Each structure stands twice: as structure tokens, then as C-alpha cells.
Image (cartoon, rainbow, N blue to C red):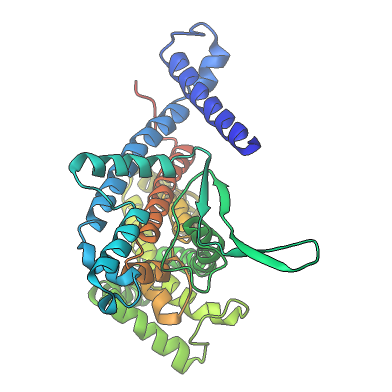
Length: 403
């Protein structure tokens, strides 16, 4: 009860805050209060709320499309993956069990309006409203009499209160401590992806930015030629093939562990280096491109005419202006580390979110697939919004005001 009270109180406060901001920004209330206007009618706040609103619509459309596409699979193909000994069961029993499976998955619809109702029901589950979800297959509990004699067993219902309900995984819970999709994603899978992803982001930034600076500073020199060759090879060779090339170099030549182990930090390096050394090529390319554009700017020519040294021009003026467009991608890179890469996780055996996506698709675990789509959509929206906010904060040329 306390969870529901706290949850709905927070939601009510958020709604009231949004309404208050709208009224203040439209000068319906506090029109003459400069302090209130400067805080609650700030262009960055208004822009953020607008982006969140448009992002909410985008997420709903993406979820609806995913929900409908997943249900284009035939009824028998779904039931065969859920019902054991499907081919050996009599037709009537198969149909009864198949109906139960379809009902548990939210696929039991006879007409268009029932499908729409199922979509809105799923919207309610993933929206941040407190809700209780129960598992009927949580097991049994023995009942004893006063003399400690076993009387019978009663069925145990595992009930939990969630803010967001991503459903129950009926196929992917083996080896997991929970059947709830939200527990599997956030409690078990995402941390493995984030470990690899955040190390890869550090590698990308630590190598990509300096390499791009050196390529721009020594344009058409040996460093620039080597860097451009590497970047072109990244674009020319398919990503999967490049991952296997790095696996060959890192595992079989250098000797790093081939399989990821949660307790062994050294085993994290091969997948992280594979991801980071591949991703840093794009950063180096854009740093080089932006810096060369800045070199042709009027303020650089003016600085040179005053006799300022090339190093000072580069590191004091050019680099600072050139990296501004790239700062926007840093929040997306960090948050993207939570999602992982299903190719790299499959190659190195990382039990992360990418590997979970592959297994969920192979086993027709629809709630797991939908849950991954929802989480990915939310993280992507937050990443892009954070990138816009960071850009507005560091670049004085960017204005979010509508006037």
C-alpha cells in the first residue's frame, strides 16, 4: 500500500510540475515575477519537456509496431516453442495448452479491437504506475499439523509490486534467479554489458580524440595516412568480420582470455578492446574533420597574423571549438554501454543484454523481446536528450529559445 501511495504521489507531483511550467512559460501566471520566469520558463527546461513529450510519442509508436510485428508469427510456431512434446500430444490437449500459452502472452485476441485493447494494456504495464504482478508457478509450500505431520501442499503465488511491468519470461528464466523480465534485464544482464561497454567507451575516447588531433595537426603525414587507412578498413570490412579479426589478434596472438568470466577482469579486456578499437575510428575521423574545418576559420587566420604559435592556436582555440560537436555523443556512448553489442557478446560469451536479445528471439520469448525494445527505446531517448542539453551548456552558439 505504501508503494502505491508513494508512486502515485510522485506521479501527481510530476504532472503538477509540468502544468505549472506550461502556465508560467505561457505567462498565464507569475507573468511579472522575473525570478520565477527565469527558473520555470528557462528555454532549456522548456526544450527538455518538449523533447520528453515527443519522445514519449515515439516510444509508444515503436512499442506498438514491435508489439504487432512480434504477433505476426503463426500460432502453431509460438505454441510449439512453449509446449513440451507438442507433436506427441493429442489435438484437443494441444489446443487447450496452446490457448493457455497465447493467453499468458497476451495474444488471445479474436478481432481488431481486442488487439488494440491488448496494446493499451501493455502501455499501462510499462508506464510508471505502481502495479502488482503475480507468478502462479512459484512452487508449493508444505502444511504441517500440530504434530509436525505433513498434511498437504498449497500453491505459492509470488507477488511483487513494480513501477514498470515488463512481464514474465516463460522461456529465458533457466539459470536466472527470477522469472521477471525487469529483474533479468537490470539485475542480471545489463551489468555485464555495462562492464564491457564502459571500458570500450574509455578506450574510444582515450585513443580516438588524440589520434584525430594528431591526424589533423600532421595532415597528409605518416600518422594521418596510417589513421585514414585504419578508418577506411573499418568502413570497408563488415563489422562482424572485423570483430573476428580483433579476436584473432587479441586472443590467439596476444593471449587474452577468449571467454568472458564475471570474476576475471582480464577476460573483460578482449571484448572491450574489440569494441573500443573499432569504435574509436569514427571519433578520430570526426575530430580530424572538425579541426581541419576550424583551421580555415577567420579567427585562426587572424591569430596567425598576430604571430601566435601553431600549438597555442591548436590547443587553445581550434581543439576547444572542434570538440564541441563531438561532446554531444558522449552521453549516448555512456548510456549505450548499458545495451551492449550482441555480436561481441556472442563471440566472447558475455551474458549481457545483446546475448539475451538473441536467445529471446530464438526461443520466441515475446515478453523478453518487448522488454528489451522498451528499455532500449528509453535509454536512447535519454541519451539524445542528454546530448542536446550538454551541447547547449558547452556551446554558447546554441540557443534553445523559441524567439
